Length: 171
Image (tube, rainbow, N blue to C red; front, side, top):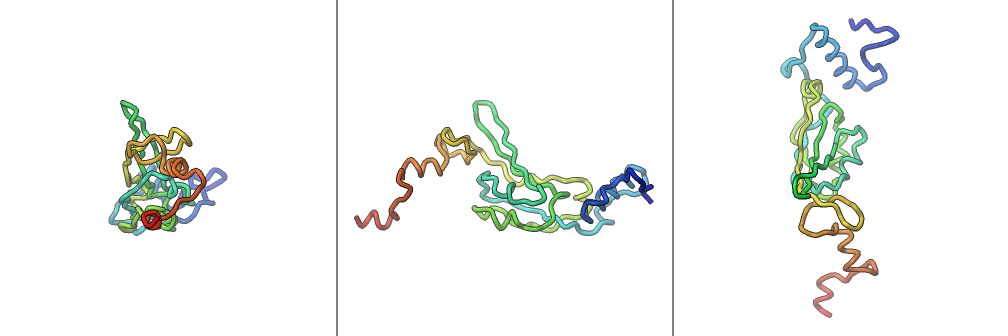
């Protein structure tokens, strides 16, 4: 069907979903098939929703498939915006990003269709105003401070610990 020989048009070492996406793209390029949302079943990827994202990059680092991406854009006046996006064609639904998000900001909104994966749809999950810490260089949500929360804590607690607020009130 594909004229597979030494120079196959699809990566035969890829997983089932990647091979299917590549095969449908080859067929569509040749005018043999058209991927429609009605004709194709589900993909292994998930539609995600982000609420309360802090642009910490944990989800990006935890995704074994590289489906999560965080890009930072500098705006006029020194402001920055970090945009968290999710590639449906790369997602395999392992939910590692959900499990490891320290803010529990990610949730599942449904399963992706194979047609969405074929079209390599990318979803923008969050847009966060961010700053760069002047001490460590970490990106953190813009709260008006020059230091990220970790560096602020370290400045306020140089010996690495603090008493709970309830105990401080009793003293």
